[in-house]
Every structure is written in C-alpha cells, then in structure tokens.
Image (cartoon, rainbow, N blue to C red; front, side):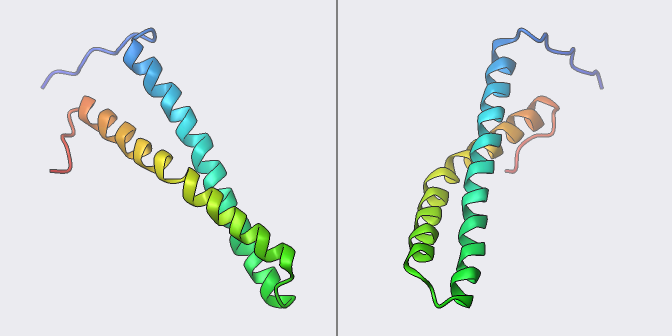
Length: 93
C-alpha cells in the first residue's frame, strides 16, 4: 500500500476547502452561540415570569440559530467526507 504524495499548499482545492472550513467554524460558532443564548434566556425568563424582552430575544436567537446553523453543519460534513475520501477511507455507503 503506497502513501499518497502530500498536496502542495497552493493546491486550489485545498485552499478553497480551508476557506470553507473557516467559514463553517464561524457559522457554527454564531449558530450555537445564538442557541445557547436562547436556552439561557429561557431559564432566566422562567424565573422572572417571562418579561417581554426575554421572549423577544429568545425568539430572535432561535431564528438566528435556525437560519445560520444548517449550512455550516452540511458543509462541515462535506469537508470531512472529502478529507476521508482523500485518505482512502471511502464513504459512508
């Protein structure tokens, strides 16, 4: 079994993959932070009889999370699958 030669750093596919991976990281951070804010504020609202501002921020944070999170999750799986395929690990199927 022979090892694959290392790809050069200027390989356009690797450059693009690294750029997408960086965007995935930022997107996940934003989406999961918004979800965490919604969860924390839910319990704050629960303890304080849900003032209007808590409900507004909870709904806003959930909307941000729902809009932002799906794309980074899917692209993250795609990047990991491509890296696994390059290592010769095959696919899930």
